[in-house]
Every structure is written in structure tokens, then in C-alpha cells.
Image 1 (cartoon, rainbow, N blue to C red):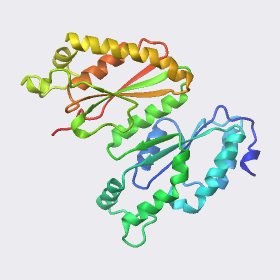
Image 2: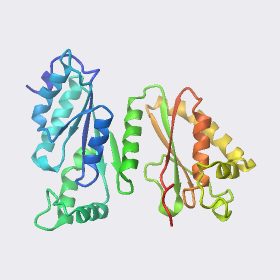
Image 3: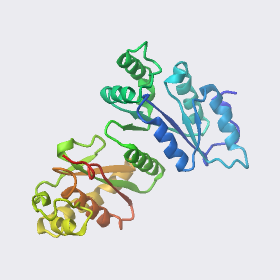
Image 4: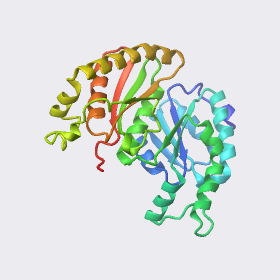
Length: 300
């Protein structure tokens, strides 16, 4: 049976997510996250079997409404077929979204070397050559992906939070998920940011001995940062801008916005301001707020 012949009518009640990406980029952790969120996950399913599997889950009485499908370099001969099958499913009314996990070549090499795993496409011990071949092989599916997550700088907990955020955003229709992401400039700009705001115009609690060991989540630092008149002006202007922008983003069908607020180390000013902005925006009817602190636990 072809993907155009899936029975059971449009799969409005079935959420299908394809999980793919570079070997070593975190697919195992991603699958665990999907399973924790109630997804039924199938690993390395041949694409030609996908329409029949989905047909089973569309049958009346099926208890599965969230399906996660893992495809990777182990099925290297299947990727052309996968794109064709996914296009056919879309035409038949079963919408699928694609999550692609990526990481830099240097990070992937380090991960394989630390775990002593063998790359599925590496000839002999030529690891970097295998990574580059896999990147070439997956280029088309990466371009088609609905969500691309670069895991180079993410730990397991941060990856889990990113997946949850992206899935939530994809399910919104009349609201925008606004994530306020604090970060430290000394650790680099966050690649996922849509908007970057600089909090280094404020005095740094790092130079106050009693505040240095604390973070922006704690009341003494929060009071030191947020209570200032210049902070009030900053927060009012930023919140007003976002209230103005959100309906415009919705009109363009953009349901996720990452607003990054940076300070030097990502522990004090940016954290306190991100939390304050989330509290200010959470009452807006078109906004779902979320807060992440990228560098809160980092030192140096």
C-alpha cells in the first residue's frame, strides 16, 4: 500500500514526529524525552512500512495518538524513500513534522572518542570522514526539517527543555511561545535567539561580595537588579515591544520567539531580567511564557 492509500481519513488526532539527525547529536536522549511525553516511539523503521504502521494507529480504538519515528544513518539507503513517503502522507492528510538534531563536527568527534563508539559510516578509523559523509547524506532531510536543534552546547537537561519548548510551540495556533533565555556573553551568543538584548548597562552584582555567590533567582540579587529605575525603563520598553510584536508574528504563523538577555557571565543580571519579563508577559492573552537559563551553572 502506498502512502497515498492510508485508510481511516485524515489523521487529525495522530501526531507524528520524525526524529533524525547526526549520529552522536543526541537522538537517544531525544527519544527518551518523547517517550516521557507520552509518545509511542519506533526505532529505525523502513520508510516503506510507515503508511501501514500509521494506518494501524488510525484505526478506531487505537490508544496511540502520539507517534515518534527514528530514522538515522543505519538506514542510509532509505532516505530518498523517506522523503517520498512523508510527502505522500502529507497529501493523504497525515501531517508529519521532522526534528533534526545536529552538532558541530568537532563536538561529534569528541563525543565518539569519549564513548569509543564506532560511527556507522566511518571507514576504518576515519571518524571525521564518516561524519562528513553522513552530513552529506542527511542534507536534504535537514533542509526539510521543521525544527533543527544544535546540541553542541546542550547538556541532557537543556536538550530535553528545548524539545519540550519546540513541541509546545508547534501545537499553538493563536498564541506565541515566548522563551526568555538568559546567557553570558563570555560563553558566546545563543544560536537559537530571535532577539538579543544586552543587560550589561546595569551595575554587575558580581562585584558586590555578598551577591557574588548568589544568582538572579535569589531575592537579594533580584532586588539589586530589578529595583533600579533603569531596569524599570528597560522592562517596560521591552514588554511593550513584545506585546506589539506578538500579534504580528501570529499573522505570519510564527508561534515561537526566543528572546535572549545577556550579561557578562549569565548568572545575575540576565537571569533576574529574564524572570521579570516572563512575569510581566504571562498575563497577555496571546503569549505563553517560558524561561531558560543557559549559563546559570557555569563558572569561569
